[in-house]
Length: 620
Image (cartoon, rainbow, N blue to C red; front, side, top):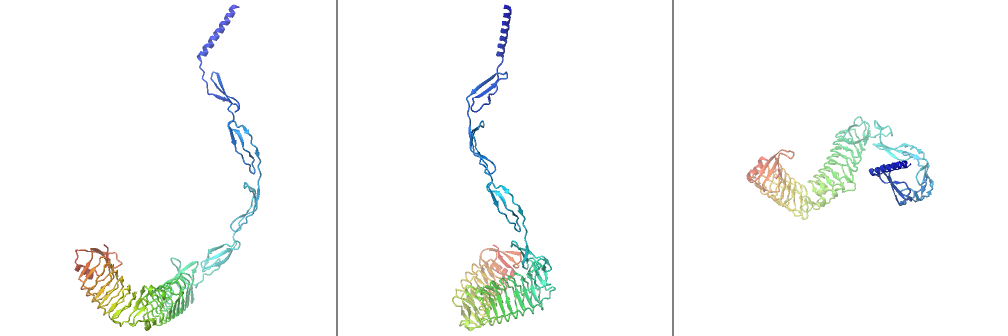
């Protein structure tokens, strides 16, 4: 028995020794602390274990809830809402529970029906929710019913249609078949059979074509295209033509288009047209002429219309072209609507209108062209505004009753228009004194006064017209007023006795022929400031011997000093370089440098002999 007990004790001791040896050999390796799920109000237990199964744990105090507020959710028409409440942000537990807010349902409203129109669809009555806008009872579409067109009116260019339902108006181009519209039936008007051709801006009437009309109508449109003009000589010498009506506004009448239509009695125009050169010249049976607004006249538009008695001009015409009504021997009245609107009278505008008694627009005329009323023998009353006149042509009133009336003249026989000297008698002799305050000498004012020896000009004179002293063969010398800036064309031409002219310091231009054939002129001082000497200005001034050209001079015209055989000394102030052109249209030139290397005689020879047919242009 005792042996058995000792054996058991030994086994136990051996086992204990083995266990003690294991503990000494193993070292625990624990993983991460892992929390065991618990509520926010319970202590938190964290556990970690070794792979051998050894476990460790720690216990921490309860952490408590983390409160957050959940906002109120509003109810809608179809969805319930909830009140504001609190929950735990960690565990999600409702701390203060939400109360439900019931959906409050739709609030129906009725949307009225929308009527359909010609172009827009409509809709039937429907219901929607006034709160959320949801359609409760849908609308049905009512289709647009379209326009109901009817023809309203037409013009030469197009016709108009109107919708009987909505009243809208549309314009549409004609659909042409021949000269009639197949839609509205409009016939283009105008004489049938006229010949046309395409122009840049529209149709041009080129002639009678197949038309046999005696009363010709030029349409505004033909087959939908604007008729813009009548061609040059389109109806020249058409002896059958009795009347002409031009329908289109702005239609231009070409050169000689109706010239010598000797049976033409009546002419009418639409507004805005231009009457070409000699367009109606020689149409002797036209009696009264009414020109519409916008009319423009050209050279000789109604020249020699022998039967023309009355002309009525539009208020907006500002110019009467040269020769426009010349040789209209029966013309009695030239009347402008409103009067005084004409600014420019062209040369010979009413030349030899023997019967002309009344002209109502002269008070506004600034430019009186040469011979504008010459031989208008019945013209006794002339209204004028002398202060606005910028040009008074030669012979402008010669042969009129006004010109010949002694009551209109001074004791010396001079005729003044206010501050303008118009004319002195050709038999004037000796010394003539122009009266103080005179502003202008009209063109040819002293022309051919062959016995005139001297003229005294007041300082008030600022302008002398062309040929003012032409042919005054006894005039010896003259001093020009300081305000004169230009000597016009032919002013002293053929003053064969003229020896001396005192030129003003302000002079800038000596125009062509100004001193032509002044054979006795032997001295003239060209002032500094003179810019140009015109063509033939001093031609045949045979006594001129010396000249000094001012530094300001920049142009010398063709033959300006031709046949000045005694001119042997010409000096240019300052060195200069000139280009010499054979005429104003050439680009080819010769270069001429005038400096100290040329003598006055050499320069004079170039001007009077070598380069007389050249225009001299100063370039530096």
